[in-house]
Image (cartoon, rainbow, N blue to C red; front, side, top):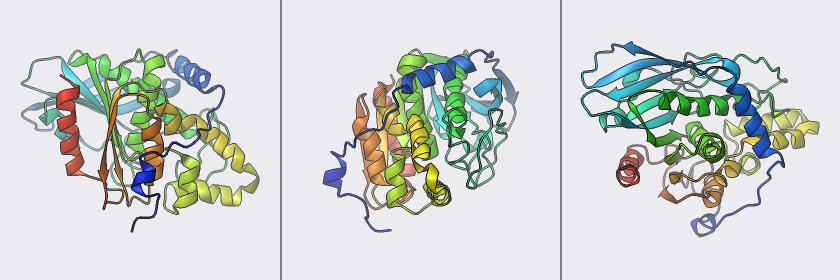
Length: 328
């Protein structure tokens, strides 16, 4: 894939108008208030996977509607506690896998909570959390992007973003975690989820997030993404609208409640983004739309010749360097 989006000099100043629902804040306040009617009830069950320097815990907690969500907590064994924590969200189609899949951050001295993504975990890495649809839904294109998309109350990512906020609360409930040093991160879908949590944190999470690191984030500037790339997962929305011709504006009205651009304007945490200029899955202009609207202190790493893989290990090194100064 060659360069196909706006030139870099335009991307760095790209600040599109936002389609923000008038009740955006009220919607999310009510959503999280509903979730908090259920006890968080976090369970941290020790798991022996043969690691000599890291303690692993099988995590279960109450997310959206009290539904039980799985995860992992990994804690460096021989370092003084409490530790700063990296709450990690997973890319599209993946699940929590095994504790041995998540050794970078605990090896660097951080506790890490990995949230399983409800209903996913069978495309490239296993998951263990179902997605009960108690609120109903609508006919959908296969995948998750149009599940319940005709109403913000039933949309799939309402449940996921709620789970993600509750994941931070779960991490904060563990005595090995330093409540004053909380990082949220993820790649692609995980980056979009991290951005949503960073945006919700100031008003609805006691400003608990210290640093956000969205890596080639998905779930941003939906309409433009559907107009300039023909790749999945955004193509799920295109295919749905291709058939459901009379519901296009309803779809995008719902998606506005879940757009990283709208969450970005509310975020206050320090942030390190990344973008790949040949990314035909999360196009550069959609990432820069969120980055340029981001209200907190921010930096971005640009990978000129990469597609959706982005910086990979190079980006991980950048993140570790960034956290050394951002989280003391």
